[in-house]
Image: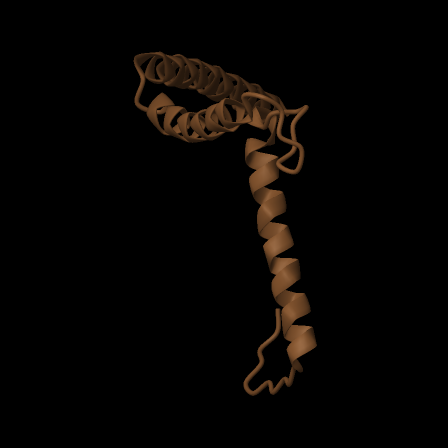
Length: 115
């Protein structure tokens, strides 16, 4: 960690442009990482085969729908059922752990009392 009170920087126009280009590239990379699996693989925008509009329209639809489905998944009955199942399993495992610790403590106490 660091604490900076006054930092003065000076950038010329070229340096500022390079920083903005880098930020744009990073943002594009994040979007491609997120939605790249839906992108039409054999087409580029420079070479437009017949029906390219339809391919890119499906790309846009799939990208948006994937975000909507992720949000809706957390309110689905299947998700809630899985969460309840995991919760019950956790509770049972925690009870077993507590029983094991109680038994272990009782054994330790009996050993100490026997000495």
